[in-house]
Image (cartoon, rainbow, N blue to C red; front, top):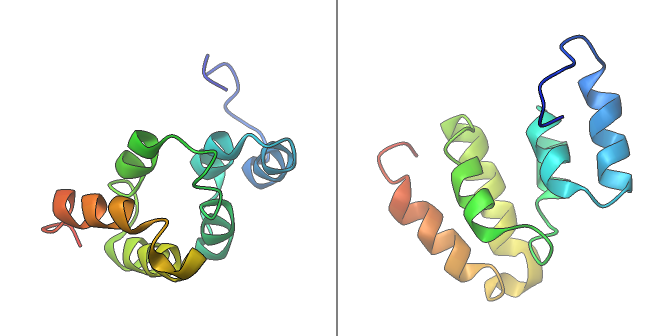
Length: 95
């Protein structure tokens, strides 16, 4: 995926396979549906925090807010609170 060799493939199917294999970062890069993104992003304990922070800049504002709300709800809000604050600070104009 990183070498950008393939251009025509079923992104959804590859994203599902990545998610099943525990390759959550690659799955996030391929998913476009908010429900899928919200499901994958719950694995914050495995995902790189900087990658997640930058990922929110790629989302549409409404989608980013929806995913951010899901992150705050997950785990009682305390586990992901620092990440949510960083996202809100960095993308306050975007959101």
